[in-house]
Image (tube, rainbow, N blue to C red; front, side):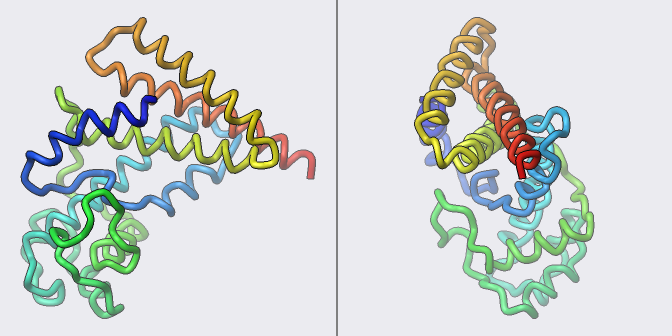
Length: 223
């Protein structure tokens, strides 16, 4: 219920606004793998959300530079990358790798960029090199489009991990996840802040991550 409400809440905003990067237009597979690397680590959900946010601001900067460059090739367009605090050489390497340079405006708005897109490849190179863009701020005002989107991505990821690790007993997972969503919704309403949906998603992520952690550690011990 939270996920559907969250998506519906922002559809009018996205439709009305001019193009701009947002968290849901990127994939975070490498980040997710790091999130799962230490199942017994503390604050898994919060740490993962922070990692997603860090990956996002870098991907956002690359996307902005690409948007400003188009239709010029990354190979000859350095200024927009430098303005974002990014090394243009990473973009050149992406071009040398034969990346897809399709204009972001021509790609589906509700799907992550293809893995072979120039933005995706250049971003991965820069993340591996530890590049940090000049602008690391994440919008979390009254519309909280960026921070809310990141929270939604994090909650969905941990819910999927629970589903995957309990695939031999899906009824158990569905029942527990349903109860968690109901409990989190109730807690969020009791808090009564301006971001009830986001508070609920944060709660869901924490519970799903904790459950996944317990199951993953137990599974490792049983082997």
